[in-house]
Image (spheres, rainbow, N blue to C red):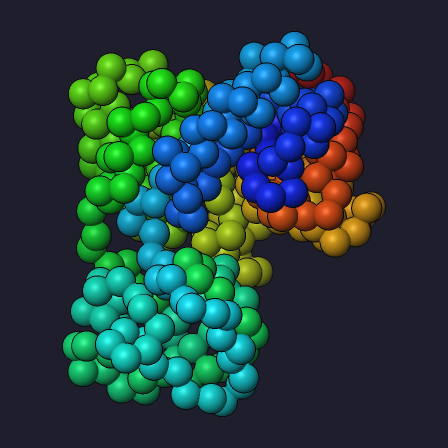
Length: 329
């Protein structure tokens, strides 16, 4: 079974990465929604690879593309949003993709930062959206944005995605996470881009994180090398009480098709701030392994958390007990 962390400020050192590999990490994810592969080249070559080699691990390197995911743009400083305040998105306000301005309508709700923040659209003129804050908090640059119940039509690969793919071979990328996969066409576009660069061996992990992906799940399972049950944005697309049944259904369909799947998002979320996880979190991991997960991935726990190595230890040890329960892997 594979155990993945996410690279970030909390683990970008030889000591931390060595600790993660010793704890059982078999590879790491690099989120390219916030940085380019070129920016990370020296760290990958001088820190990540040497740490893996020293630990005797033939480590995977997973890049998570931007794809059709919507995000707010760069902000000069964080914005503190209070319940009931007015917020302008677009021209003269918070920068957002043009697809949001084209698709959003009065009455639509906008989820920001994986549902941490919630807005409602009160007025739109094609250039900007006047919104009201329903659930406040701090908005930072490049946080996720979703129009609840609406999927804008945007290309599967961005220009920056293609630039990152140009470097993928030289930097030893082994897997690619394709976000917000809507159907097999998205995967075929990525497969074609990989083939053009001599990267046909790279594994495609299709992230299921919206209704459109669920509606076309069978064709996505057939076209992908692996499925990633990405519970963050998937949970934004439905009431949260529906998410457990959806996760179980995706897992079942992957098992029946013989397709490996990865489970990700908030597996040990409390360990971003605490050295010990909650009982619910370890039960979640255990049940995910019993459902047939072939890999588990930590995100903020290793990227920005206070206890990255401890989180990996809990992940690996809990999964190990579950593997013994289900008969190994």
